[in-house]
Image 1 (spheres, rainbow, N blue to C red):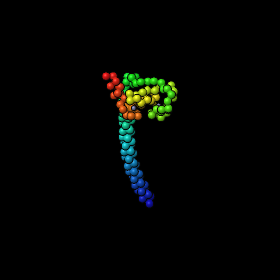
Image 2 (cartoon, rainbow, N blue to C red):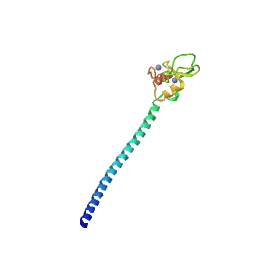
Image 3 (cartoon, rainbow, N blue to C red):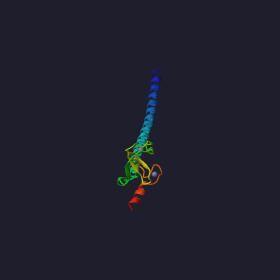
Image 4 (tube, rainbow, N blue to C red):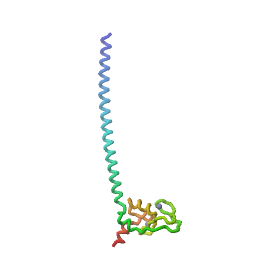
Amino acid sequence: MIQIVEERSEQQQQQQYEIDGVSQRIWEEVANQYRQEIQSLQLQLWQNSVDKMFQKSNGVPKKFLQKLKMMKMGKSNRQCSICCNQFQKDELIIQLPCKHIYHKCCVDSWLQSSTKCPNCRSDVLEALKNQEK
Ligand SMILES: [Zn+2]
Ligand SMILES: [Zn+2]
């Protein structure tokens, strides 16, 4: 009777060991998957920051921004299409070559990522380059 009990417990130990071996393999696989995912996430983040850098250089260069007509707003009930707020008297505004006007701060940040007028989509940078000729 005692012998049988011992045999059983030996068998159980062996089974236990096998299960541990299997679960260890699974954990290694899971860990490897996570490692790969983290690596691809890091790659994506890096790619995103590179994209952003290139987007910034897609805007209008500073030396051209300085050529834009800047003026103070008089009385008007027109509104800036970038921030959708009405122009207030004495606010600094910029007139693009296409004659559309915007707040200076609004157009400054807009033209950092785009060269086109938010209203009529005409190319501000091209127009400024043509003025130079
Ligand atoms: Zn604005
Ligand atoms: Zn325009």
